[in-house]
Length: 295
Ligand code: NDP
Image 1: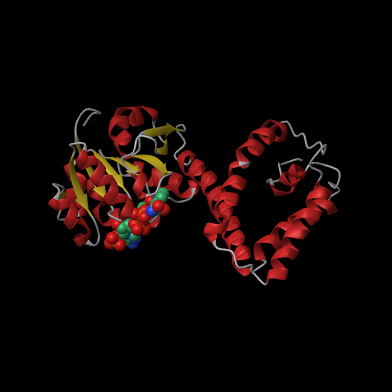
Image 2 (image 1 turned 180 degrees about the vertical axis):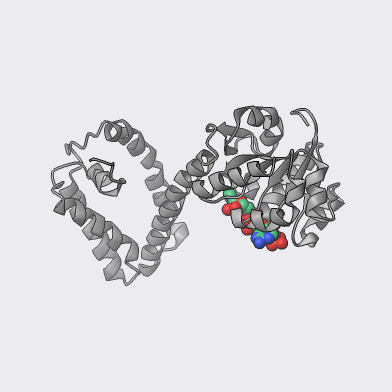
C-alpha cells in the first residue's frame, strides 16, 4: 500500500474508532473493521465498512492497520492470538498509554515483523475528521511520511515528533497532565460557586477569562525557566503563599472539598521551607523536577 491507496483496516470501535471509520468512509476509503463486540460495527457496515470475521482477516486485508483500543494491554489481548498475521503490517496505534508502554509495544511489534507508528490523538470523537484537529505521531519517519495522507483524514494535523516510539505518547501525556489538572481546577471553582448559590453558567464568563489569561503566563515563563531564572520581581513565592492560603480558607469556609487547594498550599510551603520566599513562584518548578544525576 502507498499513500495514494485508499484501503485501510481499523481495529477497535469505541467512540474514537467509530468516528475514525466514519471519517475514512466519508472520504471514500475502503475500510475493513474488527471489534471484540461485533455489534458496534453495525452502523458502519450499513455505511459501507467491511466487517472482518476475525482479527487475522482484519490484519490480512490491508498493510495499514489503525488500532483504537482502550490501552496497550488491549492491543496485546487482541493481537497476541493472531500474531502470525502481523508480519508486513504497519500498525498505527492510536490508543493512549504511557511512553514506556508505547516503546515496549514497538519492540513487540517489530519482533513479529511489523512496524508501529505511535499516535496521540488530541481531540475527542467530535474532532475526528476535522482539518483543525491534530494527532502527535512518532516512529520510523519513512513509514509515517508514506501513510501521512491517510492519517491526515483522521485529524488534519499530523504532528511528527521523531523516531522514538514513545515521543508521541509523551507529547500526548504532557497535554493530558495540563488538561486534567486544569479541569480539576474548574470543578473546584464550580463547587465553590455552588456552595455560594452560583451556577456553572453564572461563573462561565469569569472562568473563561481566567483560563484565557494563562497563555500569556506560559509564554512569559518559558524562556525564564529554561534559563533557570526565578527572579521574584513581581511574583514572589511569599506573596503567592498568602494567596493560596486565602484560596484554601475560602474553600474550607464554604464547606467544599479542600484536597486540591490543600495540595497547592503544601507545595508552596515546601518552596518556602526550601528558602524560595523571595524568588518567583516559578521556583516551585525546581521542587517538582526530577533530580539530575550529580546535581
Ligand atoms: P474506549 O475505551 O471506549 O474504546 C474501547 C475499544 O477498545 C473498544 O473497541 C473495546 O472493545 C476495545 N477493548 C478494550 N479492551 C479490550 C480487550 N481487552 N480486548 C479487546 N478489545 C478491547 O475508548 P475510545 O474509543 O473513547 O478511545 C480509544 C483510545 O483513544 C483510548 O486510548 C483513549 O484514551 C484515546 N482517546 C480518547 C479520547 C476520547 O475523547 N474518547 C480522546 C483522545 C484519545 P469493545 O467494544 O468490545 O468493548
